[in-house]
Image (cartoon, rainbow, N blue to C red; front, side, top):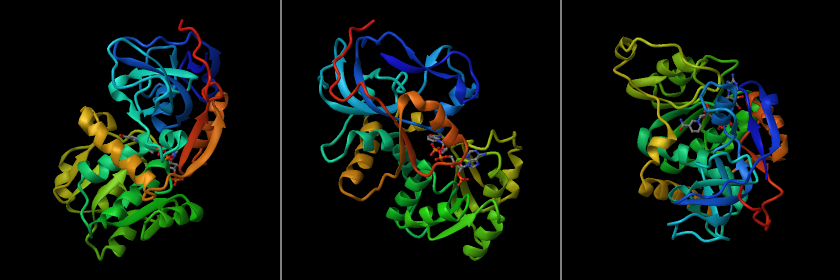
Length: 334
Ligand code: NDP
């Protein structure tokens, strides 16, 4: 089979479409013929070496496709089942393995591509709005990068709860998308002071929670946008790592809470994975959550996908599609 491999950390050009042995599913695992892989910022962090992985490695965690084979002890899955996961050992590949208990079955009303596009960013928006800070109707929240993959879903899920969403976005087209997804106010954070705008919109009070995936460039403004005892959920670093902070700052700015959450810790329990994925896929099936697939790109062009994502050129989800999958035969495991 072929896969996108990284032999040394670096720019998008270090990703190579190479022939590799098809993995064999071990005990408790399934081998999945990948139809579409989701592109996520975490893939960039691993590629650049910001997050460490033993080299060489196959890029990607998220994907969806059809079960091709199962390892010993797997009873809940059979070849032919449509499944998705955020825990593939390299999803930018024609075939990938995952632990069977980390795979979710895709409902009939949801396409395989929708599932590949929704699982990671959807469950992230879910835990942030339902668990990290449990939003209530009427709460003001601030969503950074509101037209991004996670951002558009945060806007929709916050609105669904009845919260009042202020979103930041880089430019008028992205602001329009965030408004369509449920933001009642938007701020072009390249042109305006976010904290000042938030104070104006909230009558001086600030927001209960900031969902900040941008990191270095937004961190200070996020703290300054919070109400007393507000929560900063710093869940990403698209603009770079935040410098170390003195905890005393949380006191002086109003007894604030700061958390740096990760999806892995909010779906660690099997029941939690089932609940969050069930909600996300169920809302898509019911037409209550819309997944914006920005572009589908052939998997061998992963380099182009990363350039778009890092270059702030995307709105919504980027998918990498694989030719081998649709009904493809399982090659001999090597
Ligand atoms: P996005 O679609 O949000 O893309 C990133 C966006 O961030 C850009 O489009 C851009 O929007 C904004 N941005 C601001 N500054 C920069 C910069 N210097 N370089 C690049 N982009 C910038 O990506 P995802 O939805 O895939 O991920 C969003 C973030 O969420 C990432 O930081 C990711 O690591 C994090 N994440 C965290 C998870 C967790 O559990 N902790 C899980 C999933 C994602 P604009 O032009 O509007 O500024």
